[in-house]
Image (tube, rainbow, N blue to C red; front, top):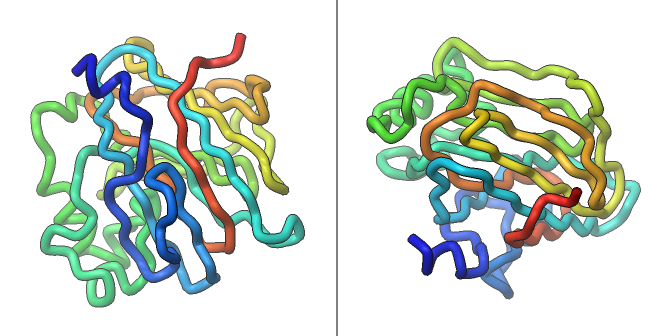
Length: 211
């Protein structure tokens, strides 16, 4: 476990049609507006405080930032789940309404283990275009809401996320400045993820939360 904490973060799973060839293990490039694609880090977070920095470089600043940055349960997005038939080419784990993609929602929930704990927050993200919080339990509960301190990331920049599993919270930092606590009620195991649907390059790095 200690060795894993010393290793740089990288992306380990890539799902969707939008990513171009990966040049560095810690960054992903989306080249098109061809629907949502998702990259997930294999680093599993269990208890304690975890901080990550997502550096977003947009192809052009005037492009809308269709980007979700957040945490997701330790699941496979493709195990028995077809990108075309089930995901319908739109792979984003925080947008999985059971009404429209019942096969995906059911197969994600079926991977549940005791390590998820009691929390129903199975995926939670900061949406760069509006700054809103999106979350889901992959069943009937989901949310998209404003929160105190909310700001959007309109151009290129860095979004920091602090996952505090002792307190059950996810807090947001923008370009080194703390915006506030975005969501509470988190618990159990999570991994970092990015879901993108607009041209940009997103890099992930481990760090400490700014004071």
